[in-house]
Length: 97
Image (cartoon, rainbow, N blue to C red):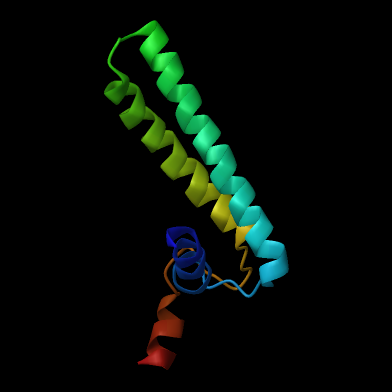
C-alpha cells in the first residue's frame, strides 16, 4: 500500500515528472531495492567495524539512502528537463506578479 502511494507522491508532487509509468515504475522499484541493499550493507559494516549496536549503523544507512533516493529519483527515475533548481530571475518574477 505504501509503495504505490510513495511512487505517486514522488511522481506528481515531489518531482512533477511527465515520464510514462511503464518507464518510471520499474526504475522506482529498482532504486528502492538498491536503497535497501545500501542500508543493510551500511548497518552490517558499521556494526562490524565500530559498534555492536545496530542503531548507529541504521542511522548512518538512512542518511546514505535518503541522499541516494533523492539523487536517483531526480536524475533517472523522474527526470524533468523543465524543472528549475534555482529561483526564477527577477524579470520572470515581475511578469508573474
